[in-house]
Length: 231
Image (cartoon, rainbow, N blue to C red; front, top):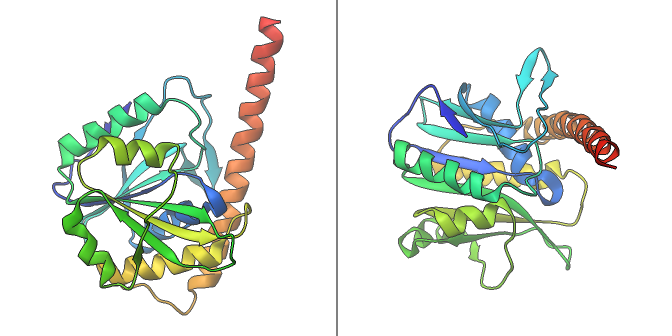
């Protein structure tokens, strides 16, 4: 269920769900801090194990919504891998689309790089948006299979653009995340200081890895107890 305390009109919505290399999740986490956002909501999924983390004295919920008034950007951060509840995710994002009337949803994700290259590709549901990404020097994704929450957004929402960053690692990849951040900076003029960018992205990599590992451990323990009870 989506809960919002504020409903900014016509924002850009940038979102990422944990995927290959955590590239999108690290980038969103960086922007939440860099843009000095405020938390304006969360998404609660019915069947999820209730897990939150405390990091640096702040509450980190499974899926939270943050807002930068200066840039009129909404950021949706997810630190739990979505493996079910796709109908709920669909319903929540359609509700967000209806209530905020976003200019565009931008979804960030990682894709495997079999050749060792590190390009960023784009796919736009609206053809009119393609030029905006082509002028940034990106190539359109011509072939591919999209699964999970990103596929839900592409299927259900009206204006979605996906950025797919190539990564070679299943492990968190802060270097590729930094390239995504640079790209978003060029697209939306976010005044990112590039000097400490890689170091800061690496810091977020470590933070997210710790939060996700703790959440996963608790979920696994809850599932084990449930199975023992049923058995």
